[in-house]
Image (cartoon, rainbow, N blue to C red):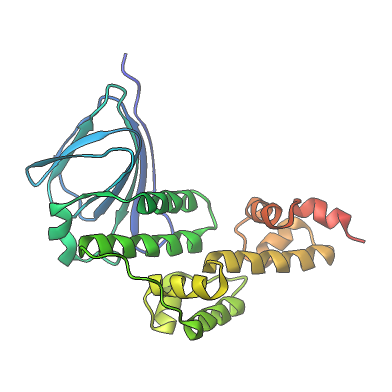
Amino acid sequence: MAAQPEVSAWRPRVPGVVEVFHAHFTEYAYPMHVHDAWTLLIVDDGAVRYDLDRHEHGTPHDTVSLLPPHVPHNGSPATPHGFRKRVLYLDSSHLGDELIGPAVDGPDLRDPLLRLRVGQVHTALGRPGEELEAESRLALVGDRLRDHLRRREPEAAHPDPALARSLRELLDERVAEGLALADAARLLHAHPAHLVRAFSTAYGIAPHQYLTSRRVGRARRLLLDGLAPGEVAVATGFCDQAHLTRHFKKLVGVTPGRYRLSSR
């Protein structure tokens, strides 16, 4: 008896991500179909064989596959035990229609760093409250995909300390309420990926890591003032107490509750 498919799908609160889809199929084969969004696919186990624009392609473990919108394709297992995949469906704010042709010509990208970064986006999207991290990582993924499709090497990051300082000031002003990367890019008149690179180059830490550390620092003070962890989570911008606890323990070494009890 064939194993039942395992699927999970959701729409995250991250601009430009239409859907996240994780699945494990053993025998199911997709017929020819189209999407109205870009399909960014990684396979964690097994492999997929598919036809795109009447040409056969495959997805080895170290490959990132990018299928353009409106172009028919199918898909079927290339191994006896099927495949396990993770997919992001992205709208045109990440990749424009002018890149459809190059994507049709070469949809399978062998790039270990890109593969790693796509996986990091999925990890961030699976954790409530990490929208800024997901958005930041996705901006770098989009930048690298565009580099591939335009057939040039990724450009080196150029220092831009003034821009980095402006972003830090925005983050400092909005520690509790947070700041979407798209909003920061609009306010500072910069591309999101350039913002992330400039900030990381200047401070040695990504914007989402900086914001989280500021929130944890504020949480420490409130815990020492006697507030309960649940109240502190709300006051410092974490989506719930579990979200606070995960980051607090990572940065401080103990849970918020233990930290509060240790105060004198």
